[in-house]
Image 1 (cartoon, rainbow, N blue to C red):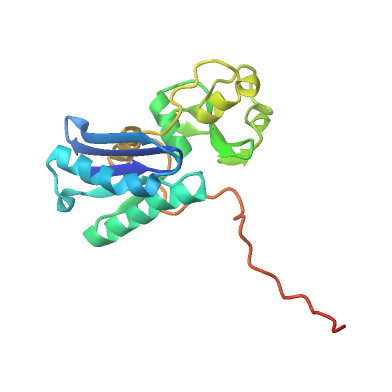
Image 2 (image 1 turned 135 degrees about the vertical axis):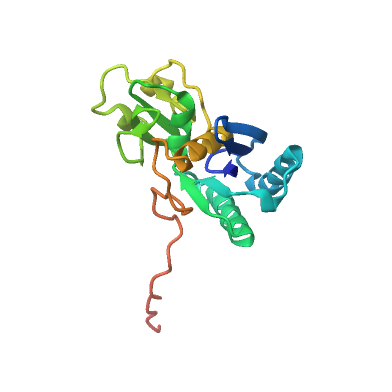
Length: 226
């Protein structure tokens, strides 16, 4: 089973190709990482092509495509989702999604409770709490950093870029990993597709936690003739 994974829900443009074989588990075949909040469109497709070339693989070799579904800023997030759906349709392979917060949580390998927070801009964070790296304890949410620890046990560790941006609120302990990696996404996908326990497989649809800024215009106001 050859799995292509990528995530563009944060400032990271991260791509990885993993192969799963019985007895060996998930084996990395190639990866590419870049951090640029303004160049998701320009960097994603060349990164995918580069990873495939590095592995000596062809598109027809893929068994599945996995993509991070957010939460994240609309523009970057849709680049990954549109690309994943287009590739899946063209290659006739299944496309699966994972919550990007779950991908960061999976990479921590923490067995004790913690939280993940990513940058939501506007002085807010996307966040969720976890019982362990395999089990999310709350639904993803967006709000001020203080929401992350509101009602949480004292001293709850918080990881992710959002935590690093607000250490005065979320603590100044170790916040790594700051951003999702496609390697963690691919490992998570392989584990779940192999039947192991872990976060829920999702459809490749955006996980939006905010209403769109753009609104349909209302009816035109009547103008009274002078």
